[in-house]
Amino acid sequence: MSDRHSILIIADHASNFIPKEYNNLGLSDKFIKSHIAYDLGVRELSLKLSKKLNAYLVTGNYSRLLIDLNRGVMDPTLISSISHGVKIIQNYKISSSDKRFRIKHIYNGYHNEISNIIKKKGINLIISLHSFNPYYKKKKRNIKFGILSNEDRRYSDILIEILSKKGYRVGDNQPYEGNLIEDTMYRHGLQNGILHTLIETRNDLLQSSKSISEIAEILFKVIESSKQKFKKYL
Image 1 (tube, one colour):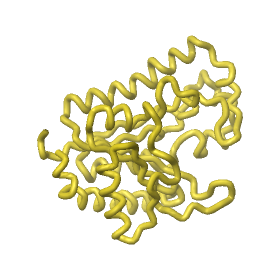
Image 2 (cartoon, one colour):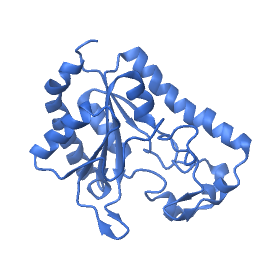
Image 3 (cartoon, rainbow, N blue to C red):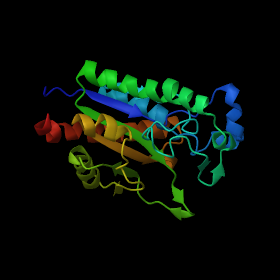
Image 4 (cartoon, rainbow, N blue to C red):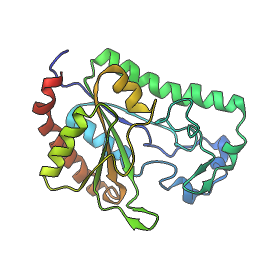
């Protein structure tokens, strides 16, 4: 494998877009603008970080309420009928034809784009960006970053080490587990033997363009610092 760093940034939940014909899936704008619909701040973060790294970028262009791009196609939460206690009425009664349409045109289109870039551009590192709420069940999450990994921890361990040495509070498979079968990292990273990780950023650190730029700079420096460490795997 080439020792050239060819990086792909992906952002599964970058968008809260729902086409008009779905009428917000019966939800109010309050929910469409919240974490249940997308990862706040991640679209701008992915754009800024990929530019700094001169990396390739693929972002999801639809809300995860329509279909969750970070799930296997057989996962029961691929098209959720409830999220964070909120019922998504139109997903309860989804027709088989609508489900096939969402899988074909949104889900498959996204993953095919990732696969094509991996093959054509010789990608040897995949970084998935997500964000998480600062509170869960009224309890403050004190970590700033979470590094999620599956059984291939090679790159995740490098990032955890660097972030920790820089003094950042970082979660190891927190605030979520990173080992979902057939999720994006499993499908494109683990199954292809490509170095990969998922970086979660607490979304109160992504509330303005300035703060997003600051996080992008932090992650850029960390990833740049990691290059010598992961070179042995290329």
